[in-house]
Length: 510
Image 1 (cartoon, one colour):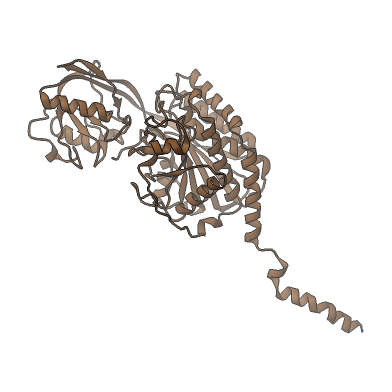
Image 2 (cartoon, helix red, strand yellow):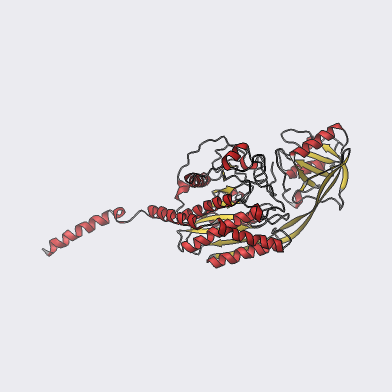
């Protein structure tokens, strides 16, 4: 009897051992449940009002350090220290990543027509430009013939036509650096690049070595007006472009969870530096504050994420993505493999905003192509989050002109959101998002007016929700990166950039 009883007891045990899947839950199901639960909590608890307190701190820092928080300045150093201290307080492993770069600060940017009809014209010095003498230079303007690659080749400059003159060049076809170098080769003493779409023109020559002559950017309307005047006869201008350039050092701030599988690191970043023209509260205090807020809520609500979560606050973005480029360049081959995704949040509270999601699969068919494998899934995940909440959105070109660029270059899936810079809101976008058509998404872009009053709290809240949902989801589950995406072609236009994309100072291409 005892033998029979033992055999009877053994039978279900043997059956159980033969069917392990029936006895143990699918780890994938557990990860998905944990992810869904944490994402809901973070979205519920992450607050734009709380994040606004970080913006107030950034404004206070700028007010006490000369009005800006540019990389290499006291304002940025204080901002980085604040972020470092906050993340330490939240319990993260935090470090500085120091690097050297060429600090730039505009000293003068003036353009005036002297004759035949005097007037002043707004002009923006290009980063790393050569400088004119103090007081500027006076010279006639010579117009470069317009084609698809205006001013890009030596043949665009007729013999002797540009010697001693200032070249007026339409944007398009090549880098700003290439245009001014070709003009310099033809004997021009300065270059004025005018836009090929609405909005101001903010650009960089890339580095000091590329700069040949003083170079600045003006609007399309002013450029076309100057060209028409030159066609009627000699046009003489006073032109002063001067820029301070000196070697300085600055810090990225990197913070990550103490736990989580480093082989599956999920990463989110925002640049912390401003331009020297203003405090940079939207560009990009907004993205920086959004990350801080969600990082705090994550620390409160999840001590043991399945995956390691890493946050980064980049420096010297406004000088050409230098902080993120330095970080990616210094990742080991293993380190690059461990970063499974990168999400970027640059300008997420523009006053005349749109909700723009980086076009990972190039479904809009605008500008740059698709991102690395997984980028389409990141776009899809953000879009699905917004769709469930009935929040309108549209794509924006994956140009690589914000801090996702270096990650894309090494094949790391990338994405994120953006609410627009100096691009002009269309009628269709005004109907979709509200706001005013025919006006820039951020009229204070790269200007002194980018302060606390420049923040749209509705856009800020939407994007903090996006960050919170992504952090909560990917902290436990990155399986969505392997799920196929059905690409749906759209009637995409130039979107948030109006042909300019994000138009940041690091924009070197046309």
